[in-house]
Picture 1 (cartoon, helix red, strand yellow):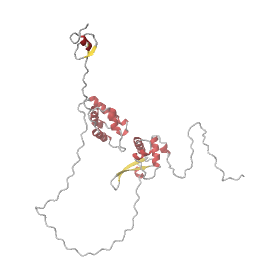
Picture 2 (tube, one colour; picture 1 turned 45 degrees about the horizontal axis):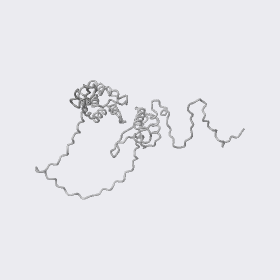
Picture 3 (tube, rainbow, N blue to C red; picture 1 turned 120 degrees about the vertical axis):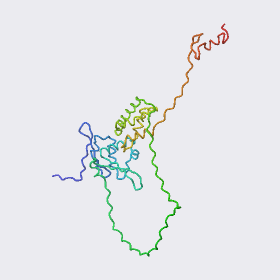
Picture 4 (cartoon, rainbow, N blue to C red; picture 1 turned 30 degrees about the horizontal axis):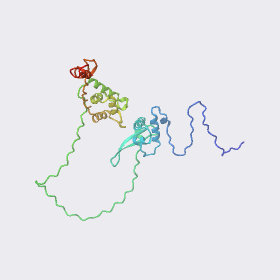
Length: 313
């Protein structure tokens, strides 16, 4: 029997596939700096490629790394809108969860929980990390009581006199001013109102979170009609309402009402009346056209006329 050669070189790997096409996996051993990612993420049918790549990138980061929209947009070529949409996809499918917390200094920060296995709404409360309890340390020995001599009795304060000045009262907190009223058109225009209602109903095509109830469409339609009355194009109104939405949008109708009121454009200035050009007249002498306020003779005929110029030869 031939002796087994333990120091023989390993067999070379073939990189040529037998099939006509497709992918051939060439895997090398990586002793460090690698991340185990499940196929449920890399082959997800309902996630976009941007969301899949962003989910893999987030799972490869260490704890405490910044994954906000501004930081990710500075690292990759995708803009903030595509990164924000990808984060929403990952959050909707249970791969991440964003929690807003208040620091001891009073700042509001967002903590992102990344799951290598997607979580559902029923089991997310069991997957959140719980802070470890602080180990109890033995209490230091209590100091010996210090015996102090009794203090002299303090006489009670005298009763307040009627001429004493009363203590100033703390200032009353004024209520916040009411929000400005929603814009409304100055003149009724049924056709413009129908255009405004259709524009609000179609906002969900730009972003699914802008799905409005019918009562909200009726409430916001006068504000959109006011924009249209001031000369704003419907496409410009749609871009103003549906662009740069916050990632944690919960009340779309309130956001649209705020934008319609705060970003209301001024009315267009009145167009200056144009002066009418001098009309054309037909010359009574040569029948040529010339500009004049009244019919008569052209300049050449006036020059040769006996009345206005030298007599014809």
